[in-house]
Image (tube, rainbow, N blue to C red; front, side, top):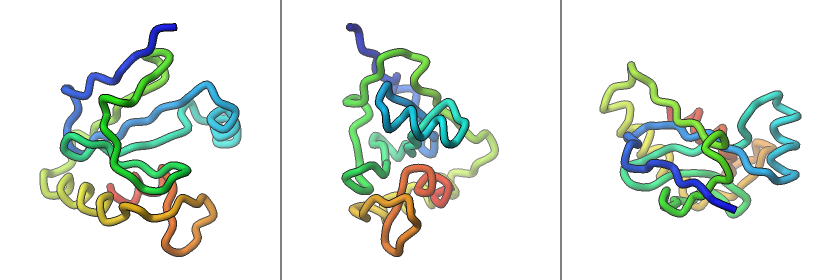
Length: 119
């Protein structure tokens, strides 16, 4: 089965990447939230910051594969300033290595909250 890679050369600092997988967890999140996507990431100068089951980490966008081009969308705010992009990246990096939790526990993070708080 063919896999697709995000055109990371087209990404710009501060871009939000929403995606989904064909897994039970992803389907459950989409069903519960009534959303098309179940995961959020923030592009930060050559790397992608995300919170997943491992915790908050930096991921090489060249290693993210999708089953279909429809499994990912990139959102770009047209009114964000360069300073806001820098601050978003700095915030996301400051969260590095925090544990993953959707319960809102102290010193934890999950993907959508990471991106929302960075923006």
